[in-house]
Length: 109
Image (cartoon, rainbow, N blue to C red):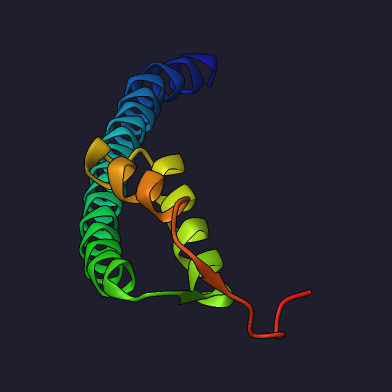
């Protein structure tokens, strides 16, 4: 009886270890795929933000005075862009936005 138990255990140990290793490998591959997808989404978001900020900058920069809530929104979005690791394309626009004449709307306190 002991021989049968020993043979079963000797057979099951490699099978269980092989199964555990295959699960770990699959988990590692899935983790890498998820991280790749997250990085692609981040890059897409940065491109969209850069495009949106550039378009808004050229419109606002042509205005004589920019409403306070628009300036605040633009600057906050620039800061989020910088925090996400956006490139230096927006930095000169952000610096220029600090020189804009601001028209108070009374919406912001």
